[in-house]
Length: 381
Image (tube, rainbow, N blue to C red; front, side, top):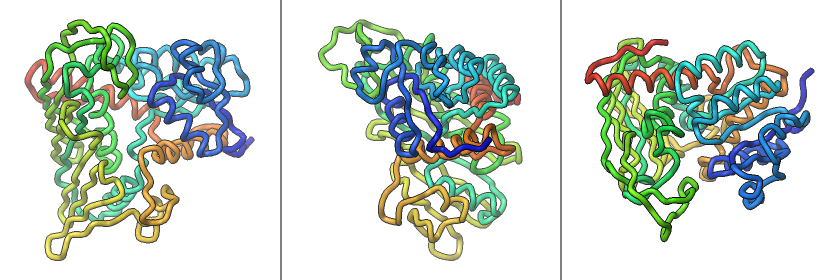
């Protein structure tokens, strides 16, 4: 039986930076957050964002919770997704879906067999100008796509004293910069172009070989000034340069860095085609650059009146009133919860599913192998 989105209820696991963003987006969508689970009940209660469950199991036992949002460290995703599916809950999981492609393949199989809605949280698709870029590429306005290039740059780990659990391979996985933010870029550009990445050549680098790890926990983007520290040798990359080949023969290149001084959160891409080009920068996310050969280039500001209809449906404020990072989560969940309200996944979901999450793990496997063996590596679907 179909329900209304406002009738649905969620539980959020994880109360760090991104868990708080999930809670905020759900409330702005009109979804009640029944409660949250933190690393301890005390830490969750200190955030004062929602009622607190004593345990993850307690959340799963609550029959009022329709959807579980997982914003926990990466190594917990695989067991927690399995528990949620077994409990009959729809699941939204932060990326990566799991630490290995073997685990993600299993989760895809379990989720698709369950009939439950499942989403990997690639929210960057839902910036309105990325929706517009996809519509323009798919409609043929750029002609034949020749090249896709860009990067994802941040500086939040640019000094030896910057620390986060993502620096620990046992919790975050074999790849760090590529797995954390490069995966967003690869998901986004494949979704915009409709072309799968089929081959990679990767060069990874550790810019800071030894960091100063605090002896206590540090929340993402939080200051750790004045705490006691110890030396911690690094095993995961700060920087990646990756050459790409897409399934239609298109070439691509990607630069990923979490030590790019001055770049706070900058996903950027350009798509070059036979009739035109377009480019987007996440630090100027209200703009889409349109490249022309024989007429002036354009800067298209986010404006529903000037956008393709599918893209215009994903934006809600008038031109000149910025919609930002938090709004991408709201619009992603609007699509997810529409399917939950209908009772199950659409034939062609508008949101990234667990299968999209699995694709990124497979890509990361290929990137890692390419760097180790210094060669082109085919990406096995």
